[in-house]
Length: 383
Image 1 (cartoon, one colour):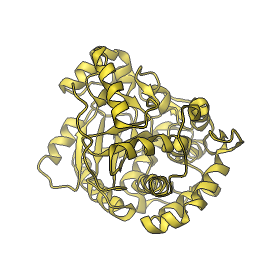
Image 2: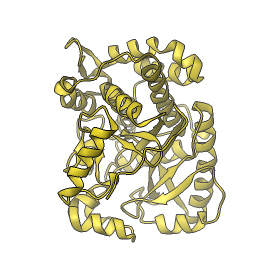
Image 3: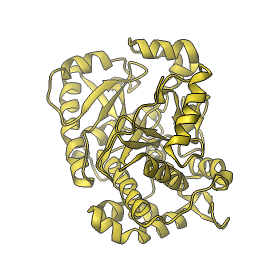
């Protein structure tokens, strides 16, 4: 199968995908209700889409093409409202978070769609264990070579995206010790990890042709890389984030990726090379495990510092580009997370420490996603 032409897109446009948990309102376990939700939403005009995911206890919403933070937040808000109305008719809840804290994978049902059944046959129990919930962000690139350059430059910031979005400390009733345990499930897939180091579309096409010749790969969908090109959209897709607990946080993270893209594409600050990836897996693991307190190794200088320090340096450095992208408010809020508030994983642990009951944690997560303005101030709300 041919890779196809890299389509033209508006440089630095963004699109957001969010995978959501569907939970019942009795014990706040996952609920296989995606077919009913999708039926209620059929025919409703939205700025994006709501589509099924691997199992029936999850759905994915996606925006249309967004110009920036405010546009993304508005589109997410309109889709959220439609989902909340549909969920209310079914008496179910919707929640962010990268993992459901106590669901059991063996109880999940594969959504009745040919591709999902094919993946289930190929990957076995991993398919049901893939009932985890992530945020993907598409970033528009003016041409294919710029897309690959941006991809390899953005790889340096993968730990930033993980720590900012981390919201999956619990798995099957246990605190894993990770801020983002979700990515451990993703890493189990054989075509996950980093993209191959190619800086020209011609070289990438040769790689793709070799992979399809093996019979292992049929399309770009078969790669579960942390960042992958999407030639049919003219974008690169950043895929490492947990689903945040609020749409505001999701829009802020997308704005951060857009602003980094502006910095990378306008200033060309890095010269990517294969050796940059020597510390890639270490940095990614550290971010998953320790969040903002992770050790970060600069891929260029080999200097060690905390991820918190590197994030603060970067957010400050982006001031001029944030002004051009109109993302100043979004980046200020992320800076407050890094400096003081913490990430969603910290919030989830605080709620559990106060309540000692995981169903109550999920109830509060669902309330944060569905009705963030109605929450009491006994605990600080996720930003």
